[in-house]
Image 1 (cartoon, helix red, strand yellow):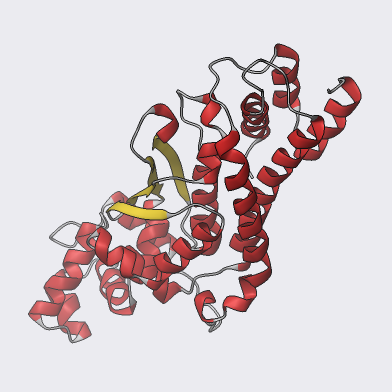
Image 2 (tube, helix red, strand yellow):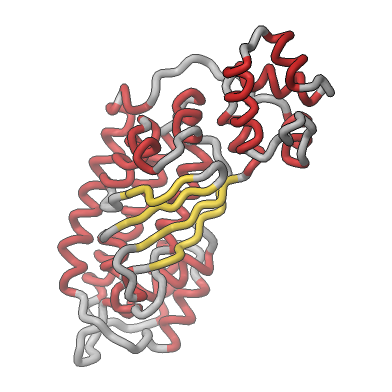
Length: 308
C-alpha cells in the first residue's frame, strides 16, 4: 500500500531497527523474516479491506453521529475497529465532525517495529490503511495524516481525517433530506418546500439543520458552493441489497487469520529491537528508497551485498 518512496522509507526503517547495539547486523535470514512479516501485515489488511463493503445506511449512521461515543456505537465503526484490531491496530475515535474525524492508536506492532527510527512520526502505513478503508469499504474519499506519534514522544498516535465534503454529504443525507434539498436546489423556499413535502415545522427545522450543518444551504434555503456541487452530482446511486459484512464474518476469516498471525509475529520481534539514533548505511538506505516492492528489495539486496 502507498507510494514507492513511502515503502522505501519503511524498508530502510526496518533495516535500522534490526542492527545490533554493537553495530553487527542480524543475519540476512532474520532480516528477511522480519520484513516478510511486515509485508504480510500490510497485505493482510489490504485483503480484508478489499473484501469489505459497508452498506450505505450504516455509513449514514456513522456520518450523522454528533459525538465520538455515538460514532463508536455505530456498527460501521465497530466493524472497522474489529478489522484493524485483528492486525494489531486498536482504533479509538477522538473527535467527529461533518467532514472530519480523528482516530487514535495507543500502541501497535507497527509503531514498535519502527521505534528505532525515533524521534519522528513513523506510522504512515496506518494513515494509508485508514484512507484506503474509508475510500474502498465506506465510500468516503479521505485525506489522512498522522498528526502525533508515540515514536515522536506523544502518548498515542493520532490520525486526522479530512473527508471529501460533497461525497460525505451525499452519504449523510437520508431520503427525506434529499427530497427537501432537491426542492431547495430548484429554487423553492424552505416553507413552501416543506409544505409540498408534507413536513411539519419541527421536521422542517430538523431537516434544514442537517443541510445547513453540512454546508449545503443557507438558512434561507439558498445553495452554498458545496450544495451546488452536490445538486450537480445527485444522490448516491442505489446499491443492490447486501448484508453488512459484520453479519458474515466468514468472508474475512482467511484474511483476518493471516493478519493475526502476522501481527503476533511482529509482537514477538518488536520488543527485541534496540533503540538506535543512527540510520542504516548510505548504500542500504539508497537501495531501500529505490525499491518499489518488498520482492524487488530482497532480490537486489541479496545480489548486490554480502550478509553475515
